[in-house]
Amino acid sequence: MASSGNNRPRHANSPFAAHVEPDVEDFALADRVCHDTYGVGRVVGVDKSGLTVDFGSSTRRIETPFRKMTKL
Image (cartoon, rainbow, N blue to C red; front, side, top):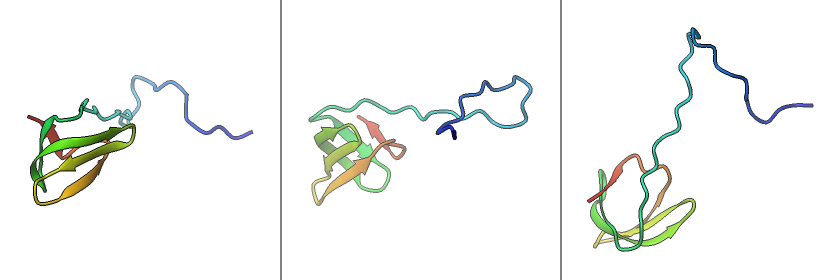
């Protein structure tokens, strides 16, 4: 039987880097945000896999994790 994930403990002296989960910032409707590519916008939709953000000139769907976006 094949395992779908690697659940073995990581040895303290392992030369391989530990897998680090990215920090996912918590956004809510009407939050003001700044995106590295699209600029300043406002969150108009939230679901478990991403956000919909109105940047004024366009509305974009931003998938998680939000590496290029910060909350203002």
